[in-house]
Length: 130
Image 1: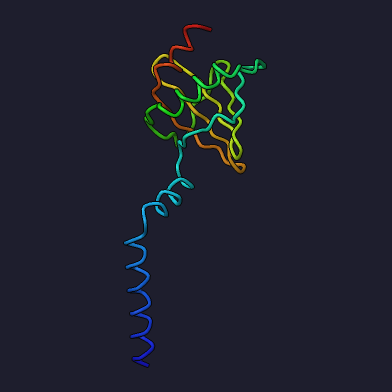
Image 2 (image 1 turned 45 degrees about the vertical axis):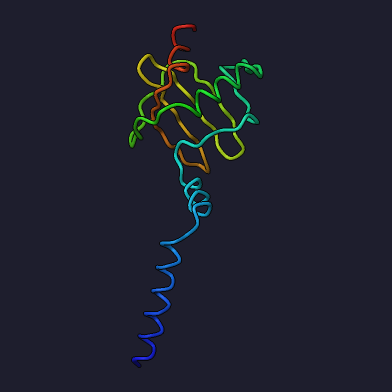
């Protein structure tokens, strides 16, 4: 009976060592799966209301989204106001509501809604130009 305990102890120790010394590429790949605010590529479609944004405007908005600072996650999402920017990525939809002090993001993925806020000067200026 003690040999079973020793084998289980050795296997558990090996698993712990492998998990603690995983290569950084593996850690990054696993981390990206659970990332709330990912970086987007340029192969997304971006709309404001019914208007589809052109390539240059789309690239500026995607760059601003990627460079924006994460502020906080909302556990109870606020009521959105205004016309959002709609970003359709491969596996998620993003609705961006810019305000003067923040940008509220609603992420729809696999029948779940995640809400959080960002700080982005470019997107926050979009409030004043509309």
